[in-house]
Image (cartoon, rainbow, N blue to C red; front, side, top):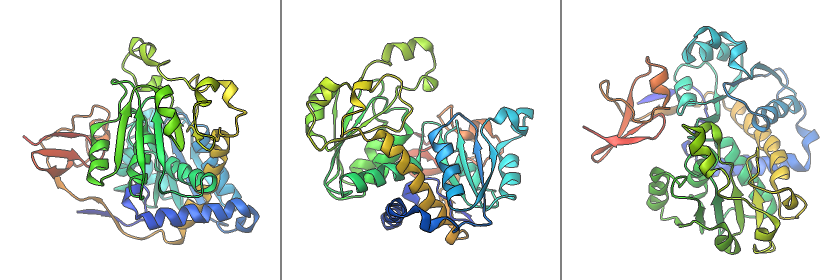
Amino acid sequence: MVNSRFTNLIDLNDMSSEWWLNVVKRASDICDDPAKYAKVCDGKIMATLFYEPSTRTQMSFQTAMLRLGGTIIGFDNPATSSVAKGENLKDTTKIVSSYADIMVMRHPSEGAAKAAALTADCPIINAGDGSHLHPTQTLTDMLTLYREKGRLENLTIGLCGDLKNGRTVHSMCKALSSFKGIKFVFISTKELGMPQYIKDILMAKNCQFSENPSLEDAIGELDMLYMTRVQKERFASEEEYLALKDAYILDKKKLNKAKSDCIVLHPLPRVDEITMDVDDDPRAMFFKQAKYGMYVRMALIMTILENPNESRPLLTGSTYPSVACGNPNCITHKEGYLPKYFRGLGDMLECEYCDERRLGN
């Protein structure tokens, strides 16, 4: 087993559901009186390392730290850092983590945040690793549900669009499946459907889910509809993207078939999957949701910095030096020095960085 000396947030499921709820409830308190928290991080430094573009996640983290009284360093374009000279992930994050009290990282490769946490000298928060996970967006979504629906249990949640590459929906399924009475409806084409490993997690937790290719048919049963963008950057070719990009569009006509108290969320940015005529509907919560993201990240920063040195396991399986992960976007293919750790699952091996499964031969 390989442990970290720090309280990292790599995957929300590394923490207990009680821990998540404490963060969400603290964020709700901050929503009601943000001025009360203006000096709690006075003298603290947060580093933000964004290896791919971001608006809401990056700015909400930076604003969160500034509102808490701390300061920020980092980069939002690797071309302006030593990464452009060929510096590896370990060296970049090792150096930057020695300057900061907490580090937030977004990276296009799955498993990058966990790889960085192996050697970092401060806690790391995963702000999105490829199409794998996005735990702080899930905390944002949980706060939105908590504030707007009043509960995190007994909800029917529709996830629509690119479920294959959508790290936000992967994280949401893993987290909300721990709460009583949650039912998921996956609304997508076969090509963009939810990965099998997520379905396996839901089945292991006896969490109900169904699949429906029609948004119009499914919308009437939902308490919350989570729209996602068909992400051009996750496709191998322009042709494949163009064939699927308009598969699911929410407009006012479709929304009129939803329940009066159904809320619509979206991690943003949107392209054209939600038409502008939806924006003024009181059920449209995606702009409010983005603001909730700042408050939940304030709560998260505070929670981690209150107890930054709690040792937690990062890698729990075994090394297989001759086995390569089958996911071409796994961080282990780009950073060859990383130990190749897999968990054994019967005849299968599961990569501990990106959760990709392969036969164990």
